[in-house]
Amino acid sequence: MTINQRQTGWLGEIHHLRFREVLCHTMARENLICPAYCLMPDHGHFLFGGLGTGSDQKNAVKILRREWNRILKEVAPPCELQSQPFDHVLTESERERGTFGEIAGYILENPRRAGFVDSYKDWPYLGSMVVGYPTIDPRDEEFYPLFWRIYDRLINPEEP
Image (cartoon, rainbow, N blue to C red; front, top):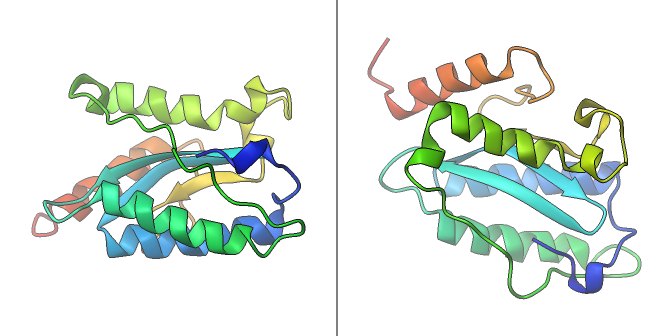
């Protein structure tokens, strides 16, 4: 999702925290997880995954855009998202765990590729959002094994 006219100056620690709150509510409301997101100075990247048949990624994007625009309009100078975001629905093969991890990695590597940091782990405006797990962080060495254990438990709550 790109900021209109690639406007910058809005990204900072407080904005990131407010954005995470919006993302958390969006994920909870539409029964989704966000294994990887990255806010860049003029745009953001997001990877969403459904947790059940009631998951609605399309509605989640609508909610996220509406609420993110609300907080973007409060920055100085105010800004908003472009009207047409780029989106890509993962193919069956892209949903395989290994490929899925590569896509998440691609999203997380954006600040390094742009030359903002030497390692994506140094970029403060990226993360993961799994409702109920506030400390899950893609910077951690054990992120993917932990993420998949949580995911499996969330989609199969009856299994031990």
